[in-house]
Length: 367
Image (cartoon, rainbow, N blue to C red; front, top):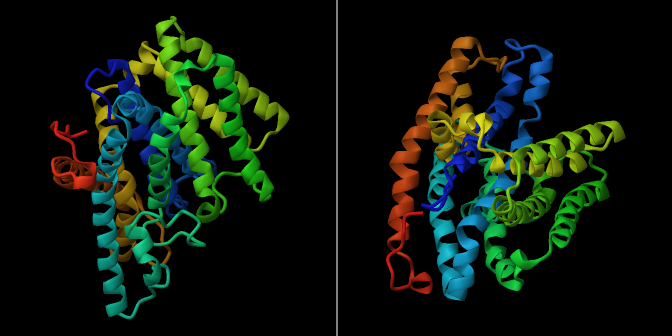
């Protein structure tokens, strides 16, 4: 997780959980090529890996509020312009590079007479502009995982307006809890209105309305967390609330659309408050590093799997243990290389060279 220099050390656990979530998405996308290796119940469990994106949305709202809300209040619209440039510098260079890799792949497919129908050329400008999931397309194409980055871009654009609309941190707790319930209820209501009970349905049409309320839930979580930590909040209370909500949803047979947003909110609340062994485990150096490079893992793994199947997998599309190990190793190596060789250098370069509309006199930090 990208955080401020004064970030409490135990929030490294939130970075660690982000790394785990990124790999859950990796295994979600390759699960159907593992049916010869793993039992059916494991494949079914991996099939829920798409829910990691909902964790990302709530976590992103938390992080963005933590790092930028006060700066936007102090700096006004000049700071808002700088915020938007920083977010562009954070997410776009790696996205553009991976999308460029897809362009190279499609060029090769067309040159060799293979099917490239999953990569509509007329949609490519939307993908480069990261607006492909704003209701402008009817199906996922090109780099499928980038849909969530497209919706988060919409959240970034709205964030300064939301911050300056009210002094949310001065709201009474009951009002913040009501806002939280409204956001969680919005997610469920939108999907229920379309007849869906799971969050993975109609991503092109509903993904934006999955992201924005959950991102807002993360913002509320950060506001509440700042109060809880100052008043001696305890992680066990949030953990018990999380367990209670999970149990009640199972007892009432509530659909995933109602269960997951609240469950992830309470789980992240417990983790953000924890200073004990769970926090230390998830915040260890290995998991923290996996979290730091998780954006590269998330964006690059889909292209790598397509290439891996073309090169090393037969018509059955099933991986053996050696093939699985090779693919996972390639994802790990690519994540490290892209993070250190492209993602962070490009971010620093762009942050040092803001355009005139986002410029200000003082030096820009890299994050």
